[in-house]
Length: 100
Image (cartoon, rainbow, N blue to C red; front, side, top):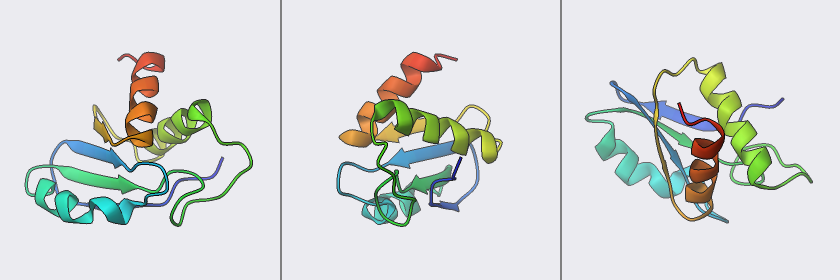
């Protein structure tokens, strides 16, 4: 499985931010830098967006799987998840699949 493109900065509890449809991680750079004063911020390009891989398989199940793969690959513990629009729907479905 391919890993999503991301930018990581700051220190503290991990905060993953997912953009909306047709967006990219760059949409969150300004707020991400501000949040990085208190958190380790991970801005993510979701599949078929930004510099992440492109695939014909594109749905929330796939995006949840991508997010779980990223969290596992980065060995993140108890990350905070924040999403806008499509990113918010991905986060909600992730929470339903992984309530812990």
